[in-house]
Length: 272
Image (tube, rainbow, N blue to C red):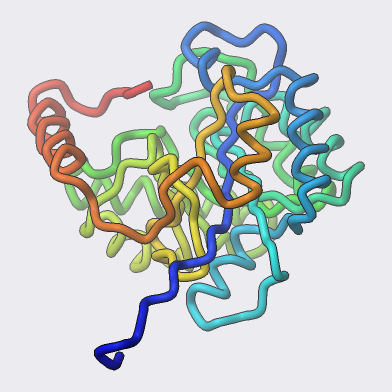
């Protein structure tokens, strides 16, 4: 770069993070639940914005090697695997021809749930192939939904690999994309994700992603129950949040250190 050159800002790419879409959610997930009516209104706002929904796989391919993206992409993602996902939620997306990526916590899908997630209506393992029939991409969200950056190396590897294997057995093909539970990650976690065979991993960060984001720390905007259509419209315009990539802040690093110390005393725990 010459002395007079000016760095061009990264073009924002909204990557939205949804959880449950239901009218009467359990209290523990209510803050991160969108009602079906509001969800449909948000999808219609996305369509009206002129952005083109793509999967995380498409964004990851661009980040890894410059694969082409539409001029104004957006990514819709869904975490955990709540019961609405393979039904009305997937149907609403399919009716609008909207691509999306679902990240599933395999231990929460039954038949005998064993995860750190509190009780909630969840989809089943038998329903996982239905998501692809609706046109959704499927990724892994670990087995038990732990804070990955607090785990010992062996436990970390098991969470990443076993979820991948379960989903690959259900779908009959490779699963290449990961979502970190709670968004928590670290350099060691990102290296482990790559070593486990994932081509990308998404965090949270409540920030806009970009065409220069980090493939193993893709930023997402988390939808809360109080977010309105106006919020979604602002994000579609590339405004209203910071744009990744950017380094972790000192408070983020400090919070990670605290959680690791707490995990040594208490063991793995849910951090909702």
